Amino acid sequence: MTKPTGRKISIEAMPHAVKGEIQLGGSKSIANRALIIQALCNESFDINNLSDSKDTVTLNNLLKQESGDLNCGHAGTCFRFMTAYLATKEGEHILTGSDRMKQRPIAPLVNALNDLGANISYLENQGYPPLKIGSPKSEWKDNVSIDGTMSSQFITALLLISPTLPNGLKINIVGNLVSIPYVEMTLKMMEYFGIQSSWEGQNISIKKQNYQAKPFTVEADWSSASYLYNFVALNPDSKITINGLFEKSLQGDSEIQNFATPLGVKSTWTNGKLVIENTPDHEEVFEYNFIRQPDLAQSIACICAAKNIIGVFTGLQTLFIKETDRVKALQNELAKVNIAMSRIPKSLNNNGQGDSYVIEGNYQDPTSEFKTYQDHRMAMAFASFATRSNIIIEEPDVVIKSFPRYWEEMNNLGFSIKDI
Image 1 (cartoon, rainbow, N blue to C red):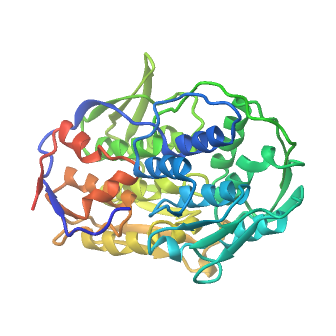
Image 2 (cartoon, rainbow, N blue to C red):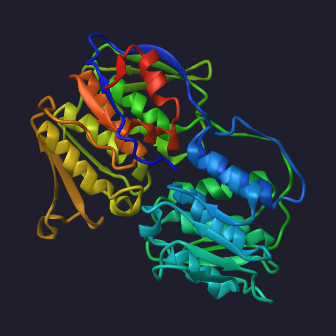
């Protein structure tokens, strides 16, 4: 867990085009799923290119510990996956996390697991961490309903344990499922390890099966790549070559190579490497529904802000329960560059896709520091404003959650970064 240190860094404005080549680390989303599958498998197997992110390191350590108080820190994926994993184990476990984690709802997953036969109770506030997870009840049911509108990680947590349950599991998803690519990623990974599934409408069914041990390589992280898109989009003549990404990716965030085109970034694959380069033309208005790629919203918001592109964003409903309230955080920090992020009144919102927000204004160099709100994505997205002017980032160490080498890679690209 990254605690506030009071540390600040200054980043000098980039005086020339951003050019270079970067090797990205493994995807924490894929790595975390692989670690749970490894723990549930009867035989050991190797995981190559395991993510060095704090979230993955935390999960790996907790799976090895499996006793005493287990602290997930800020790692939401870790907490949700461990909740389901420990629910199938004998003995008593205490699962906790950071103060922010204790504000993030866990009730939909806990209710589903308890309905199935788990023995989970709350130690502090009802519906929120920390949890006491006891030995499961004598019999596990084989079907359950769960709300799909809050977090796809609840669904994934259930899917990962489903083939190990006595009678498998049928999951009925209630409501419109958010972040569908992450559920698709889970099922594709499970298939790689020998698990067959059926997804029809709102129901996913998995029979009792055994995970099959096979060597696995974690592809590089497309979410991390999005911040490199920012540098290229915001600085003319910029060009970055990225190693480690898969062209045929399991990750929904790989869609950025398509929708970044109207933002001024061309994506080309050459000899297994992704080359992204600045193009002079971009749209005046950019509309996108982020329901499938919510982790890209902050990156794209900063591109729109710095290029004075009017952004119309929908599908942001999961951002309120992330590491911080990301919508509020965006509103606060974008205001520092004279950009407003306003909710479109329901009376004017006829798209049928939930709340919409418009991002607009005339970008001005910031006169104050950017806060990160203990959120790695806030730090990395707003760092891209250094293509425009000198900036200051508070609590920069939060990037260890997903991209520990981020500031080092910025330095390698030519940015001057100093502690202040």
